[in-house]
Image (tube, rainbow, N blue to C red):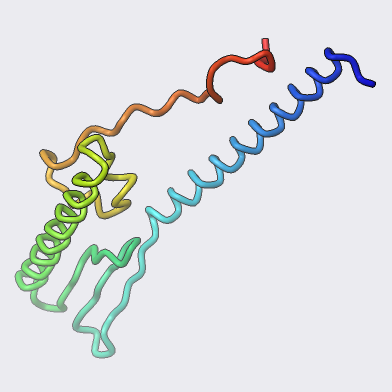
Length: 140
């Protein structure tokens, strides 16, 4: 039968492996998040007169009309206005249910960039990277 010190060391080893696995998963998620945030697709009409660039979540980043910069700008501004309004409404619904402390970027993802600064709260400080209160298994 193993002694207490052997069991403690085995549990410490397991805990360290779990922590390492957690860090690897978090690194993978952060990498995927960065890759998704940079994602963009461009489509151009068959006759070449209209070009649309979309980002994550299908958000239209830009609309260009060949030969009509003024109309292109009006289209982009109108799209921005509509997306900003629906984003504001989404945040209102979430905050009604979860409270005002909700970080918009965690709920809305890339749409959060359309919020007015007064609507968005500063990002909450990151949670401490601990696994709860100290225990007899804490690494010393």
